[in-house]
Length: 109
Image 1 (cartoon, rainbow, N blue to C red):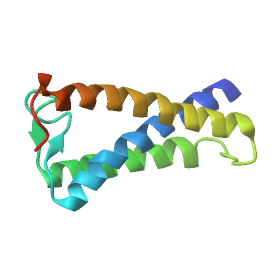
Image 2 (image 1 turned 60 degrees about the vertical axis):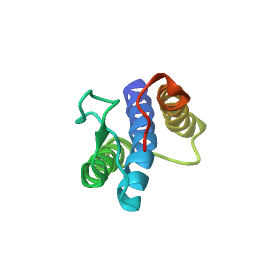
Image 3 (image 1 turned 90 degrees about the vertical axis):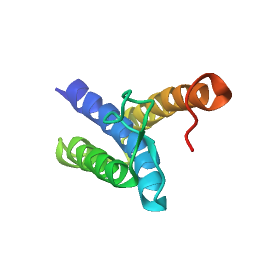
Image 4 (image 1 turned 45 degrees about the horizontal axis):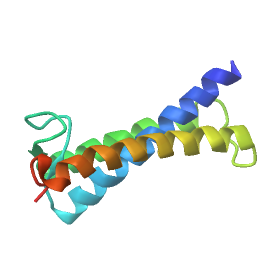
């Protein structure tokens, strides 16, 4: 059962990392790609859509990290699972948006 808790923390970390650009863009009043844009993940969504999507990611992260079992910052396995989820999705987002910003895709402005 502990493996499922670690998986929950990994996915929770990924959701937490995904919330960052959406919440930041939303609070800055800037458009940013979201799953609801056309085309999905490339087109730009409004600041409001991004704020709501970012908040939904935060709620999901809270449920997966804060409500599944008992996440303990003193347990190395718990922290590593959360950090790996954040790192893996953070790298994927960096590569994805890096391609969009280098001229081969739509600009994020």
